[in-house]
Length: 121
Image (cartoon, rainbow, N blue to C red; front, side, top):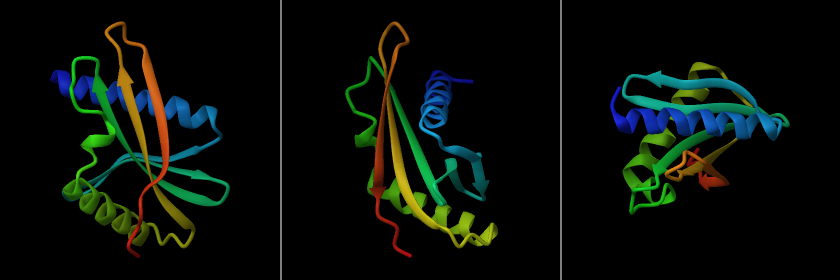
């Protein structure tokens, strides 16, 4: 596993811990359908949350929020649509972002951005 994958996996673990502390129930992690992937699918208060996790190490210039590009948003929407169809889900849904910055000591700063992406369905 390369350094980027290690940083990403650590960020997803931090995101899961944050979600658990805030009463989210994890439904799926790293869900895949062909080339589409959802980092985390979670449930809270009868609403399904599709959560993209972006992690950056202390050495980066770009913030995690900046990594949510137009192409990534299109892919995120398609993945969420596929998950809804495959799971016959009729719950209200939203698309969120968890941004994780880690410092040189490994301490993570986790930011939850609700409705970071507006679904087009």
